[in-house]
Length: 333
Image 1 (tube, rainbow, N blue to C red):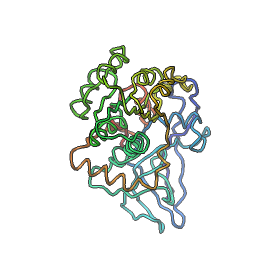
Image 2: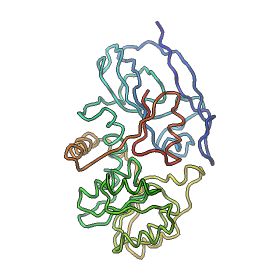
Image 3: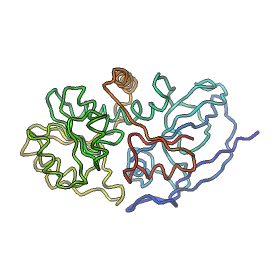
Image 4: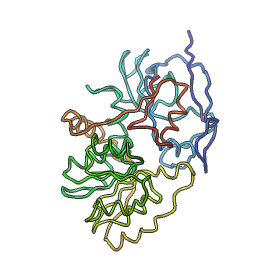
């Protein structure tokens, strides 16, 4: 019997605006039988990241452009339900780029077997791109040393919450910026941050000065815009500024204007660098083992926000841009 499956296709490029419902189209399509060396997979969970909007806009040139009618690109965890001599056996759980589809036929070359004694969903959150992005951005680019003050924007997000905890493990003081008293309370009481700054309470620059009186040694920025400007105003000598994301730009679609305080990099002999985590892909297996060890040691806690139902994929992505999610945003099919 032929396999039919539902898929979400890209139906619009949301440039210069937020994502809307019509940017996606739900279709039913027929899949071919697995060829030699191929497998039929059933998607169990999808993972969501702010970068997906950049992919939809074709603003990110480190990945192939997306055309109208393409299956929406995204990460997932899938189960092998049929194999024609494929590299994984029936029953194996695998993760990687699956796209927004309930089933897919693949040779699995870009997929990895789920091998963890944590929940399988951990491979999309603390052990997935989220965790390795936090690890590589902080340690490869930020290069913190014990005693440093590390300031993280978007700190209650999936990546930001891990950054602060890794900073604590490295012997640093961690200060996070988030929106609202609930998220700030979670940062301090659950994620172990030393202090939290509520940007919704206003005067972020003054709050940073209060909580980072000796200046900031490492900035890990997930937001951009005015928040980055306020952080740069209080950097310490030889500070390292890590540019990870710019969620402030996603609703407008345009890249944020350069920070007005960038000349503080000169005054403080500081550096600012962006990164693409794929540059360290060869190290991901070792980094995942280290992160899993931190979880087992209870020095690293992670949060997952799991929605339900394939038909809710577009709404689940939009949760990232309205601040509704707590931790890694996922969808269980």
